[in-house]
Length: 260
Ligand code: XBP
Ligand code: MG
Image (cartoon, rainbow, N blue to C red; front, top):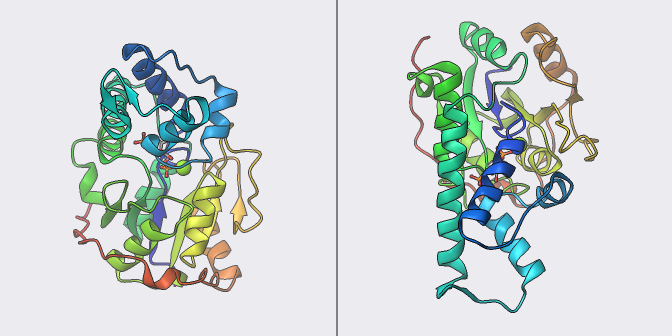
């Protein structure tokens, strides 16, 4: 029986990557790196989950032998760049740069009213989640989610299933009683790797990805009802776990979702 929704953030709750891209380029310019990612390049770089990992991948692509910039080593430089990037992104989101995608808030409300619990499984940084949902839901946004798995709880980024396994553990539910929502191939692989049936809502950055393993692929959730999600969820047997996936989660303390 469908008991919980587990939402990805970037691309799923909101189409955020254009703002992430602007934030990365702002950090590169502020630090005088001479790097600039255009949308086509960023679309390719999104194959790497995690902003720091993405920048490290680019660094190794453009300057493989470079181990120091301005006296700071790779890790210190990436950490500083990511701090600048995250501050810019947080401020842009607080100023209304992104809104939730169609149907997301309505389905969250309908789910909570029907006793279906909510969790988040993302590779983005915690501050980015708070900025987006504080703006979209309000100061009490955290009360609506039983648990949140993010870059701070799951160091193994998507397509590794760790963050979804953590959420199943926090929800204390088997995968077959949950439904995941994703936007990308990495996210779909992570969710199905944890045994979750997954509804995919692609963005312009991920429309070309392979979503064959999805339960459904829809342009967005604007025309999707809770009744429809229940029917889709009931259509298919649980997804088989990927090899060893069942053993890789460290449980994350769950917080009770308050009534809305
Ligand atoms: C998408 C990501 C994140 C964002 C950038 O996360 O891969 O890395 O692109 O955010 P999701 P950070 O799992 O929500 O789709 O710079 O904080 O990583
Ligand atoms: Mg995503």
